[in-house]
Image (cartoon, rainbow, N blue to C red):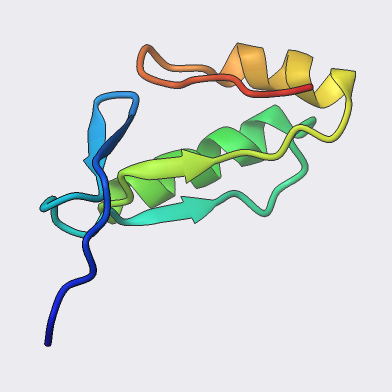
Length: 79
């Protein structure tokens, strides 16, 4: 199988694309405002090898909740 050429990008300290291996990623399906449930899900995904975990921010309350959940290598992209 021929691999499609892509360019490398960095998501925090995780390299994606280029000649890098496939990155395991997922998205939380909890309500971001429910901080304990969201953190529990993030830790469970991390435990099974997820390298990038996305959290939805639908409003300002979600963004405030998300900022309380952040670890050192997370990036917030909420509008």
